[in-house]
Image (tube, rainbow, N blue to C red; front, side):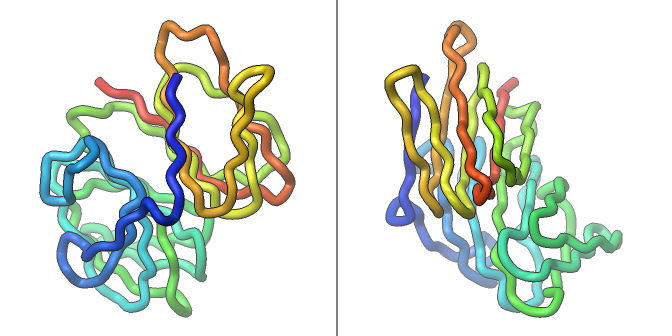
Length: 196
């Protein structure tokens, strides 16, 4: 099992692929790839302050959530939908998407992955006082509010604070189960990735 903790200082601010605004890249894999390379997956967050269009990513699938603000109105290939805070939507990166703000700016979180390499992704926004168990797979935790404790074993634990991101990789032959202990004030995104 490997655990990688990313701080706010590790994130990278850059232009959107279409150059219309800025985004904060939290994580990209393989390390050193760019939005113009043949990357496997990428996690980013952006402050959306005006209406506009989404970048085009052929052969990729995207998950999007609003983590702050009143939401976004999306026109995906002519189909209208509203994305509110703590909701999520999955769509093709090749889709033509027009976006407009619902009553003010928002902060979003975007996870994009290459569909031919990754066949199983779960993307959840969780807010609960509970204990979660993580088994085989790769997990990304983005803490939005409160704190969570990653229980590595009976003697070791990692406390995750607001705006930190943790990547946990558990091999299929590992018997150990990693647990996440939440508080009542916890709100975070949990992404699980399985490759083809």
